[in-house]
Length: 115
Image (spheres, rainbow, N blue to C red):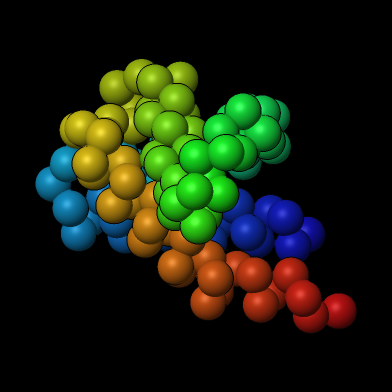
């Protein structure tokens, strides 16, 4: 149940970012839910592989390269979604990845620790 709630909150985060920035487009709440689901799948499968492959540069940048990896996973999700989810440029993807990480730190992650 918490996983579904996390998906809904992530969809709301994506919609908020799309509302605030012109370079981030979602066609609606349904597209945001699908994007949230796809993003969680991509983060579970692709992101660990990218983290291992880029470990030296991640260590050299003291972990800041993880934002680049998150932006790559966002761009991959946008590519899988087609015209329902569009990110205009890699800079916008980095900004969105940073915002998603900050918001998830204060909203989604505290929910997961409660039992």
